[in-house]
Image 1: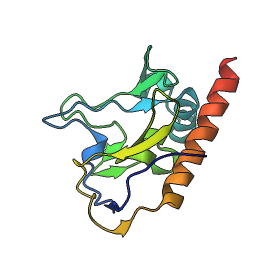
Image 2: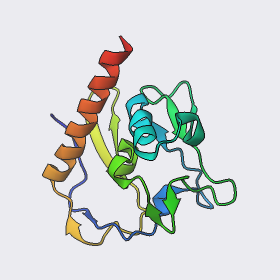
Image 3: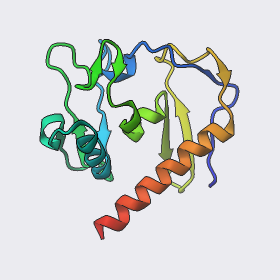
Length: 148
């Protein structure tokens, strides 16, 4: 489990819900693995088609969360609270961090400065990002084995 990550970054969620929808500068794409749509469907008793649309070309993600038409917010956001928090997608667990694989196969975490929680709270240590990395690795490996 080797990866690069930003040092000396503080983060504490301010529960502003900026990450849960579009902003004036950016349209959010809440991408979902197939297994995640199944978990959300089971947790909410809703068919996948009610909250997600199938997508292509963004593998391993195969769905994108639908958003409200008026505000461009996640369908599961109510009064700035995630109603599927326990079943939220990996991409939501990662925010404000993202994990990319470089052309030479290295894994690199980065973060967005648009998040109001960056610079607040505790330093984000390697152990926190290792847990995210491990969770991503496990979910992606599970997706890959099911696709075969």
